[in-house]
Length: 567
Image (cartoon, rainbow, N blue to C red):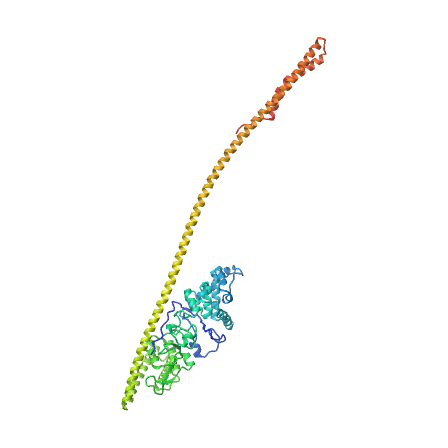
């Protein structure tokens, strides 16, 4: 039997997220999201949906309510974005990659987070057909574009790339704040070169498988996805998944029942007649027996199952062996129904039911061995038949050894792929560190250059301040010189003016003196001949006036031009 389905590590994400198939061959009218309000059969709705772990959904819901409480503060920031800079989901899905990238670089982080929240709401499908139609329109726009290649997506904005990948795959996990994939991984997921299951992340085709399904189905991973519905979940250690013994591809039990891949077929041990229930793999068209697989699952995993889990697993086994016609399959079907009824009515607890089903498998094994011994003892075996049986046993042993070798090889390849992915991630981180160091060095050089410029400007400012102080002192000195020269010029002007007035007065005095002298001479001549007393009086007045003129001129000059004292 194929080993149990390996468990995928989700990297600490504990939330419930709805996922949509990204296969472009599916019609938009077909249900591809577990949020679709459609009437599905129990088999289809149980296993053909992609889901995420729901262990801490209440905590996530509380966190989302907290985000809603601060939505008003976010709106204040978003309202400040101009209409020309705003970007919508339709713009991201339809418009030129570079133009949208430039716009998103100018937008605040709150606005970008609001875009991602809007797409998450659409992917959750809370509004039924309206959200489903909006998503199909966005996905059709993205998948119809030919410019979204690995070379062009390298230049995309981080949030822009996450939104494009979420629209293309229909998985809102890429928008979750707790998940941060590298840009290279997101581009490979968008181009169907890497598994879209965030917990798997294997390169496609996984394990270099060359089967038709892995080659022709875009984004299909045979390590974690169902061959029929191309979807994945995180269920492990369960009968919900059936693995092929030969090609190791996995199928949902519900999908296999719906497609009638579980049916009666020839025994893989005896090869004679339709004697047991088998599973026919759609990938390789070969069959695997189911009873031994169910026994292995219960022996390894049943002790760890609680009541609800055990009841669910018993229900899967009942549905698998519902159409069984061989005695062992019918007994197992009846036993599962009986245990389910007792668990539902609380007649048995989960531990007792687990012990009962494990004891039943041991009894089946003993009865099968006894029946085989009785059949062989009742008849003689021909030599040819004995040789054939020995050959069958040898072939079975060789086949199991080959299966183990193939499984080891697959594990080795998976480990090698994981190592290569880690090396690539390490190289990306090293490149980012180198870029950050270069950027840091550039910033350091820029800061040093700016400091030099600042020091130079400070020196220039000090020099100009010194020159300004010197100019100010020179101006004050020149002002004092100018004031002194002004005082001196005023004194010289006053002195010159007084001298001129004095000269004028002297000239006038000389003139009057000559005139008086002439008049006196004429008067003397007249007195000798006898003169008038009135004329004598007039001449005396003129004489007194003449001698008093210089003193008046001096006093007038002093009144009009007073001397100015030097400060």
